[in-house]
Structure formats: structure tokens, C-alpha cells
Image 1 (cartoon, rainbow, N blue to C red):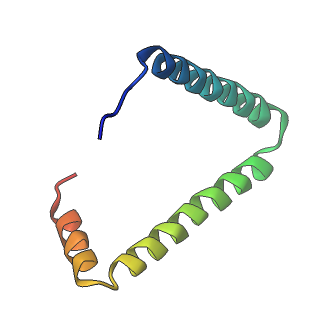
Image 2 (image 1 turned 30 degrees about the vertical axis):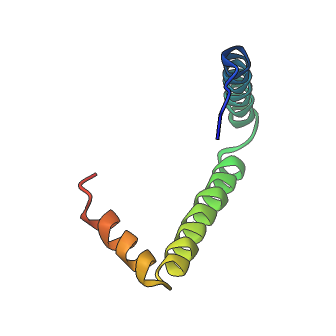
Length: 80
């Protein structure tokens, strides 16, 4: 397999990604300034809770196979 990478295209994609992230940070900063704490913190809680739920589902599914259980074991051995 011969993989050709256009470095200019990659650079452009990186720049677009950066600008999108920057716009979102500006949007979110404005949002928390213009909405009450309960509203935006409740939304953050929902997002974080959903991430924990998805993580638990992932590990549960991974643990269904011997290979998956071995991967989990190796992850737990890592010193992070």
C-alpha cells in the first residue's frame, strides 16, 4: 500500500481545526457569561456523566473476551 500525504492539505486541515476550536472556546466563554451558573453547569454535568456511562459500557463490552480482559489488565498496570 502506497500512502501519499499532501502536506499542504494536512496543514490547511490543522489550521481549520484550530480555528474551529478557538471559535468554540470564544462561544463557550460568552455562553457562561450570559447564562446563569445552574443552567450551564447542569449541561456540563450531563456531558460528563454521559462520558462516564460510555466509558463503563466500553469496558463492559471489552471484558466480554479474553483478549479484552487482557487489555484491561495491561491498562490497569500502567502508571499514569
